[in-house]
Image (cartoon, rainbow, N blue to C red):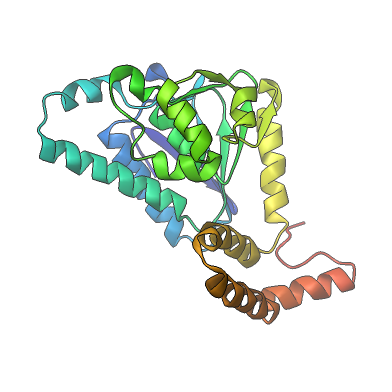
Length: 261
């Protein structure tokens, strides 16, 4: 598929989304939002996709909103601004609800809304030279549409601190606050992410999808809700073809059918 702000490719069961505006540090605008929405819709409908990797072209991951887009926003009224904000909010929600794991390969700076894409990743590995900042307050706005996912990721206490200060973080600091999962030397980032993707592909596809969904649902449930809900999940999965194949493969010391040679 051809896009003007993104590159999208699929290799067997792994898809890769590449922010492709390196000349402006992969900043996003209304075109990128529309194109990313289309990509996520395609992936949602693709039953053969099992892992998605998101990264940036050039030296940056995503520098947040495009300055030219921001200049145009200043001339728009409330209704136009609300429409564009709703489109961005809908995109973030679609990414969050993606059935398969989203791996972030954070190759460089992630600033403002760009950190929102990091927070949406189920697992994010960052280059040691990457930097992060919720910089919105520095220009008089806030990280609004990304806030539900950032707060889920790092917790209310850290979000309060980082949203209010706009602190510029190195990769180690981003790891400490829980925004990313691992810091990798720049020249080993591709290798590390590829190994992570292969590890995920060695697990049962349905089990991985259910695990991801369960983690998003269970924390908001009461004991009266999560006890029967989780019991139903494991009972159903134990009876599934995938679990039967997986347990048989384990007991007979062979690879399950979903592991490609």
